[in-house]
Length: 557
Ligand code: GTP
Ligand code: MG
Image (cartoon, rainbow, N blue to C red; front, side, top):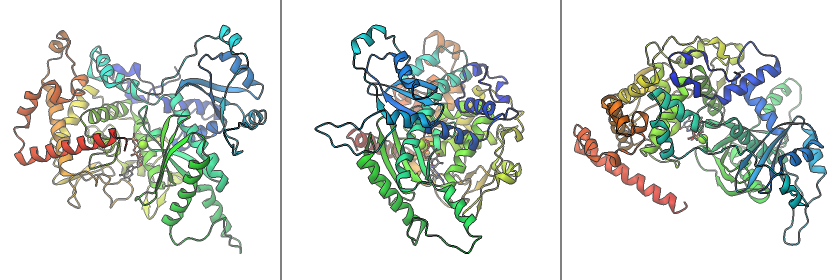
């Protein structure tokens, strides 16, 4: 198999056979191509390769009855096709990757600019095409159904049914991971969305690139999650430092602006307008320029993604790479994160809109911290990763040392062999009993540290050490998290698996993915007895808050 599992993961995880690791797979493939077979590719190498592939890719809208052979035959007259797949998104689409970039120009040049009476067309050549045959009848005769690559995960109730058939919690967790994680095809589509936005950005800034970050690339992305992308002028910066040597100074196609923030706002404003006016399939474009991190939100219909575009944020990229490293080190890491995230979503602890609840990002950091605290640890602390950093890994951003090792093979595999069954239960127990009033979570040290200020939940930003990534979380939300964690730990400890299986009741992971109030309200009440009435009141408040939000969302916010 090409889909090799990260080393230590193979120990004792019975469900490992169902694990699919798209990012890692990409890394290996790339390794062979570039002749770097001795080691896994680094985060940067994988990203660079995927971005290059995306530039050689087009998206084709197909008729409902599509003759695959004919489509490929037509396309191959423009160049060699490296890979392709079909997917459903308001009709069948094909993503087609050519071996060479100039095949796209050849395809574009073979098509005239459409002229229809009711539309005026702005002649900006895109990489979105429609495949129409003049004689669809004869085509239909030859057509065989194409395989459609799924771009969304199964609903939770279906998942729960699948989980009930597994033989251990560990297997259940790998089943969940397998159903929810991004597929190779979905990742290609995400990079294509970035690449299509880049085509627009380049109209203004010829050397810019648009790169994905966040869960699209950090190995913790779930099918259906948003695409976080940023505009990168990195190459320009490099160029600028080189120029300092000579006697010249250049006005680099830009006015001088008094602050980076103002520049960011202006850049995003014009690109937002451009996408809104001319971007094919870009709809609901929203410029959110006064946020702490200014961004443009839009829906990209051809790929079906909700996108957040911001301007290069080096710290966020380092966070993505750090999580990528943790996700690649041991297969238990991703399995645990996916289960905890799914659990949190089911119980309304996380939400797709921002608010006073815990974010997926914070939750992921809590899982990482828990894994650092195992004995022996399953993943290293950030300080340990910093000690392993080579000369090329040195990064200082805004005065903060953000260095850590990028070569995965330099990190010693863990000696920890605990099963996911144990880890899941212990995760809930650990945070169900964590002293949030006194302690904060510090991934750099892998230790609890006294809280520097009074935010209910304090998770140190790993790179900007004076910031709390969970500053938004209020006391009721934290207490709700603690109550749910305790309830889940209790269920996992107390349940009789064999009895539940005989009764055909959800057990293990499945049992904690059912909203507690619904399955057995009386039990929940008992467990809440230990918590003061003050807590219950704030808990109820937070529930109300959550409901209000859902209503707002349903109203089409
Ligand atoms: P999803 O919920 O699957 O989208 O996870 P995500 O990791 O992509 O989270 P999100 O889209 O909210 O944010 C994208 C990226 O921005 C994250 O991966 C982080 O790198 C960064 N980010 C998000 N929230 C915070 C925060 O509160 N503090 C800091 N420092 N970075 C954040
Ligand atoms: Mg995201």
